[in-house]
Length: 420
Image 1 (cartoon, rainbow, N blue to C red):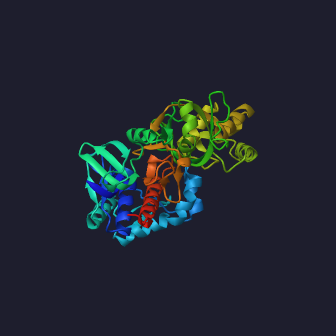
Image 2: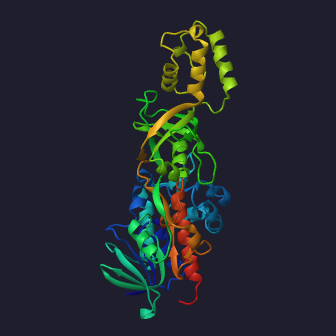
Image 3: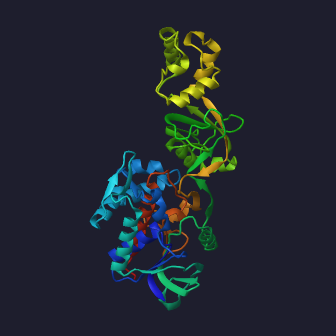
């Protein structure tokens, strides 16, 4: 069982790598090995079954900003193959995409099956062989049968000149790569929501507001990220059954993945519910309300554009009772209200997985990869693409774009090698 190129992993990166190799060099024998009984399982469940294939950011230098790990390394590859190229790939194969308000891109069919069918049709048309239920037990450098690599599997031994690993966050494969001499950055969860039990948000599930969020440890010291910057983000914040989610929270969970893991997910989140105002402006608005709405009940007026239920909770937390009039609100309550509006602190106790996203920070050390070809610097003819590398992104289709671009770069490198 000798092949020109074997791709280990039947997910997004694996399939796209195989399709690109077979398109560029149709004469090559290409094989995908998948340990599970089905291929493209993550593609199937992505985006609630709709498959968020990429993001509508078409400028490489802007696109890289969505990657807490991989930003520097992906600049070159994104100039070679970016989100616009992926849109063209699908459209040329009869799978048009659409852009949603937040920039996420989905097939117009709103079904991940469109993407899966596209890939399966391509592999069949190009003659790519797919073996499922085929777990790789060992990888060995070899010179047997004129090949570079020998793969031992439960379906027998396979040989190839070019080996591409696209197994995602698979600890067994990381162990095998470690045995081959690669450094593995230990994996930790990325993209998760914050578990918070606090009466200020209890029962407010579904309430969303634009906010600025900062992270502190339990000693109220600012949490610093890998790049030395303070952990802070702004964007929509969503209150959930278990605490807080939404883009602002998910962004921090991705950028702070390692730091929050070290804190065992016990930390403090500070929320500014009115980032568009400074404290003086908020005081001015409240003072105006005290004058112009003096006889009105505070709970019946809303001087700020905040969800009503959230406004009520912040008033309660400031010691303002439900029948109190603006004229009766004292200086101490106003100070407390400003604090609740601009610097409300919540204790985080644990995390929850964000929907069906299973994103991991960690994997093969990026210093050991040549990002012009995605070839290993440890071994020739060994390539790695997708989440097997220490690359991850925020939610919105970016993790898939990393898989597509990696697959394209691997295929280019293999196709251009004339020694086959």
